[in-house]
Structures are given as C-alpha cells and as structure tokens.
Length: 265
Image 1 (cartoon, helix red, strand yellow):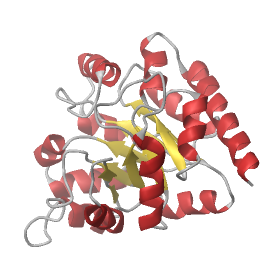
Image 2 (cartoon, rainbow, N blue to C red; image 1 turned 180 degrees about the vertical axis):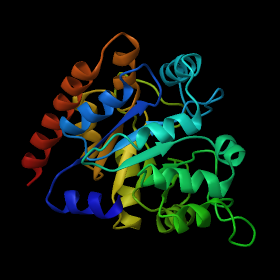
Image 3 (cartoon, helix red, strand yellow; image 1 turned 180 degrees about the horizontal axis):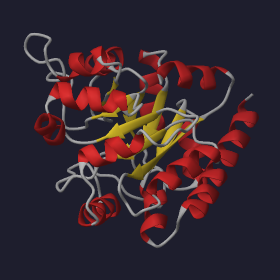
Image 4 (cartoon, rainbow, N blue to C red; image 1 turned 90 degrees about the horizontal axis):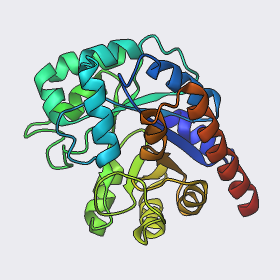
C-alpha cells in the first residue's frame, strides 16, 4: 500500500481514500468497487463494532445497521477477498476485535483476503509492539499487513516523530479533536496537522476526521498528501444511496483534488 500511495503522490496527485462500512447492505462491496473506479487511491473498510469510540453518529449508525444485518469481522474480511479492485484496501477496527480473533488468525485472515493495511485507533504507539516486540504490530507486519498509526493535533513533536517512524502504509493525521462526523468547516488544526506530519516524514500523510466537502478536502490536501473522507459518504449510503451515488460523490472529490493540485503546480 505504501509503495502504491507513494507512486501516486510522486506524480503530483493528491490522494483520496474513501471510507466504507463493511457489511452495510448487500451492495457494500459494489460500493467499494464503484469508489475505486471513480478515482479512489485506496479504500478504508470499517469492520463494524458495537462500541466504536472514535466514531460519531453516522459511522455508529452504519456499524449498528451492519451488525443487525449479520456482519461479523471474519465475514467482512472474507468478503474483501472477492473485491478484486485496482487499489489497496485497509481495514479500520478496534483492538477488542483483533484480540478476540487472536493476533495470528487476524493477521493471516487479512492477508489471505488481500488486505494491505489496518488502522486500530485504540492501540497506541506504546502498546502496538507489546513488551517484548511480540505484540500485534510485529504479527501483522510479518504477515504483510501494514499498521497505519494516527497522530492527533495534541501529539507533542517527539511523539509525532515516533508515530511517523512506526507507521507504515501512510500516516493518518487527525484533523481535529473529537469523533468522526461531518463538519460545516475544516477544523483550525487541520492544516497545521498536515504540515507537522510532513515535516517529520516522507511517508504519505493523509488527513481525516471531519473532512466532508470538496472545499474542505482541497483545503486539507494542500498541506498534506491527501484526505480520508468517511461520514459524508456513509451518510449517503444510510440515506439509501448505492454504488452510483457513492461513485458520483467520490468523482466530485477527485475532480476538486485534481483541480487543486494543478493550481499548486
């Protein structure tokens, strides 16, 4: 995934990673295929969890609906093996599910399904490798699954450097303090977060959380390598939109990011 994102970035392209809740309706895999076809550089697939502490109302509702429809972690992962898309996939889930599956089984299941990365927001830098280097991080990476770490606006500089060093695939810069969800304007911290991360690493830096519109995406991407957009897309799915609507929304984001990139060149 990191190699793919670096290659895309190095052409001058701003990266776009939509988020889709796994198991949200029968067409969720078609939604993933549609957003890739519409210009996504990678796709983040959320594994539904009953207590998604980082997520706001929209993603919580999507997770609950997916669970009610029978979604399970292993079911979502196995379904991802059938995606066959021309972009890497990264899952987002919580450590409770990773621990419940077992490190080895989880890592091997992800890799067998073609998943290239994982985001575990409640597993901090200090705990990802365990006491003796035998934690989740080492097990995942030995299976070929990259651990994407998050950096918050309050992260001090020394810890930010350590997070950027340990993260693989990309660095996830959190644009605001709080949970996911649509916002009327880009958080004041966002652009500074992008610049701080870029000063610490040459790895792709993506900003996410609270990025909802084309204008916000363009503004955020100007200080980073790209953006992650979740709640704004998932809301459209909750409201009855399917693959076509998801693709249309991602196409507008792609066009705005491409226009913004051309203006910067």
